[in-house]
Length: 317
Ligand SMILES: NC(=O)c1ccc[n+]([C@@H]2O[C@H](COP(=O)([O-])OP(=O)(O)OC[C@H]3O[C@@H](n4cnc5c(N)ncnc54)[C@H](O)[C@@H]3O)[C@@H](O)[C@H]2O)c1
Image (cartoon, rainbow, N blue to C red; front, side, top):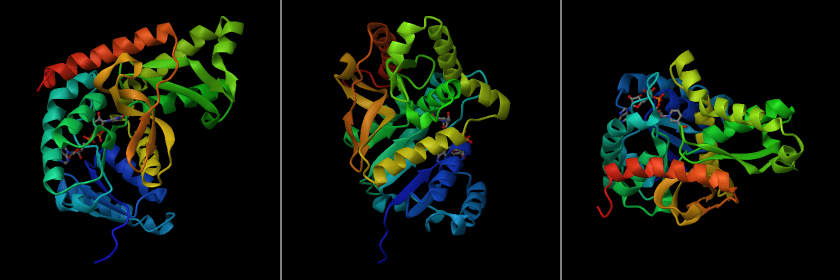
């Protein structure tokens, strides 16, 4: 029997799934990538196309059409399957359709002896990550949502443009729901090591500019979907980043959808927050020091998610 190595099973190879697969192969993150999709013909084309690029990638990732039996030896199952957001549709309106899809997928994955980590991107991601956790029966540390990884990347990019510095030198998180109630954490943000709180104290005109950057961050998905039908490259690269943190046991803080057990005074929900990610999954949720105003916005975001989560999973069930 050949050594399997780090096998990733990707379920759902639409715009997001394929962008993730491309980033994964290009960056040489996994040893094997098995892809499952109900659209078999399109899947076959994508598998061929991706495989032909392997020669130029950092390493030989074996890309092939997968089946649920591949989940048995997989390190990770990454879920990008589901209905996509239509123009004008909020992420939360997608919930019913996608909870049913998640249930069917997770049942199949678990029936095949899966013992790895789930990474979920399908929207509304915070609710669906909770659903995957419930349906799988795994410990919550092993079920991770992409959360605000994309929103944070957008925010850091836009701040980088404002200050003409690489987004890598900017430490600023978007937390809360991956959606309309998310919020920026400015109180602990730094630009190239300089405290944003101090910059705000010195320059009263900065606050409205930052609020506008946040609004552009929050509404970016609507603009991109309106222009090209879906958002894919940013989230594909964000998912690849989380995968690298897991498979390389990196212990890095990334903004993901994590299960709260009292952090920020909240429990029994999945929501966007930085968390330390390693080979075991969410090693620790990072509870940021946030201002009173940020806390009240976070609470509003948590309540929005909780109301939907409670409709699908009434307390005690
Ligand atoms: N978390 C994020 O930041 C983020 C960003 C962008 C998009 N998304 C979400 O990702 C999801 C996918 O978006 P997309 O643009 O790739 O959509 P898409 O319609 O292009 O792709 C969805 C794919 O899922 C497949 N699929 C559907 N049901 C399936 C099943 N039961 N088993 C296997 N495959 C199945 C479809 O055949 C299709 O290929 C959506 O829910 C979207 O809202 C999340």
